Image (cartoon, rainbow, N blue to C red; front, side, top):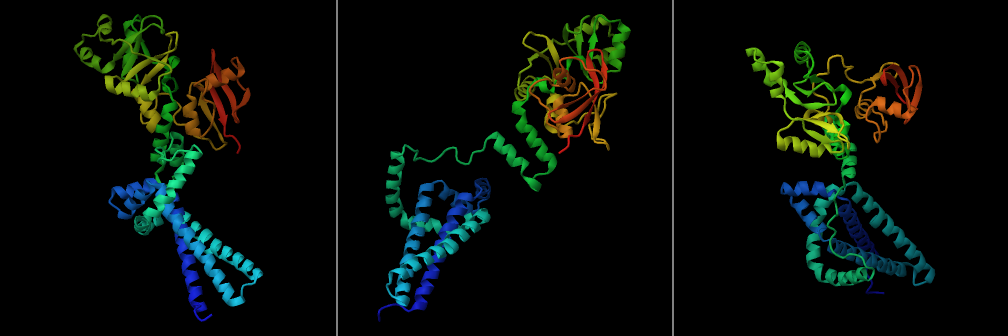
Length: 423
């Protein structure tokens, strides 16, 4: 036919349509896969493309409407154009039209769908801030059509009893999701910073009982002891605050701040009777108190020490602000005299651990996963497993971790050897 366009022009038009369709496909994937937090960060710096992208994402129905409207119109036009080219080349035989349908489907899949979507997904953050410059004007001019189409979309969603308004929870991450995000941050966050953030996420699940110093390890003064023994204990104390009791260690009457005693000691005014006047009333904390709430209480009330008690009022241990801070940032104070220091695997793949060591500390320093939902110390975990005090030389395996009892004393396990579990 004389009015038919030349084949080169038709093929060129087909190529343009396929590329335009690919642009819409790439734009859809890039906008959906873009990191909204990164876009917000750029928008706060005044990046115009990020601001436009966020504006488009706030109205997903309009954004998808203009993208899919353009994409479907172009794909339909491409199919029609292929039919025209086929008829000009081969006539209107039915088998030829069938072959042309397969060809246009293949071309759309490769050029306009799969390849652009892969590119959009891989470079989503880069592309999202640029495609907005094209999509926003298109949405402005095609808004009446998009609005009309969305009327039927919303009606269908209501018929299916699905929400049609914006999702207020879109983009929000739970604590566990944020923790996973931090752990998978790779080299973007320094290891020390990553450790701090992970510890902060875990604070919600930790109570004061998990970080306290057990009662058997509390350093305390006995007001009823001979004065020479009391002064010797104060002179050799590692801590600046000591629990004070009378006769029975369970009968704790308060806490004394040793720094406040320096003046009376220098003036020679400190006596056993005068010491009782410097004892502050004890502050008791329920064992199940979250460490976050306790830290806030310490800050608000200018306290640094508290005694942890169970539901019967029996003292379980002592917790300080330093204990909670160390749970977040790691140990920063000097090791206790006679302590075993840091835990590290030996050359033989084992390490000696004191029975009173907290399980949380063992897990953190050795990279283990000993259970934390029961006893808080290694001694308690082993005793609960045996239901008795085991003898030295006995070996067990808990949570896949081989443990050998090295030394027992009285009613507890003094030292155990932990072996690195095989992977």
